[in-house]
Amino acid sequence: MADTIGAEQLRSYIERIERLEEEKAALVADIREVYAEAKGNGFDAKIMRQVVHLRKLDSADRDEQEELLDLYKRALGMAA
Image (cartoon, rainbow, N blue to C red):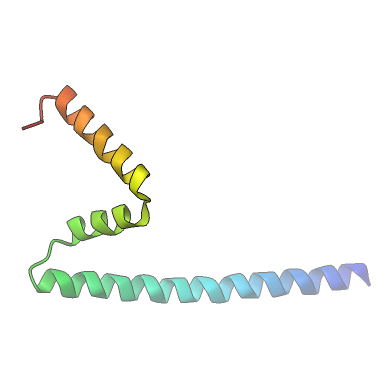
């Protein structure tokens, strides 16, 4: 009996994960379409991805990353 209950619970988890993976794939495709549409209207998708990433960060983390980037650029002679 315990094996049956465990197997049913496991199957339920696996099926939920599979459904979520399908939803995730659909969302990824939708996001790709939005980037393609933006690119078609003259926007740079690579830069847009960076902006999306930066907007996910809180201001302290964003400031820290920008400071480190500036530090590295200066160390490599790339700063203006």
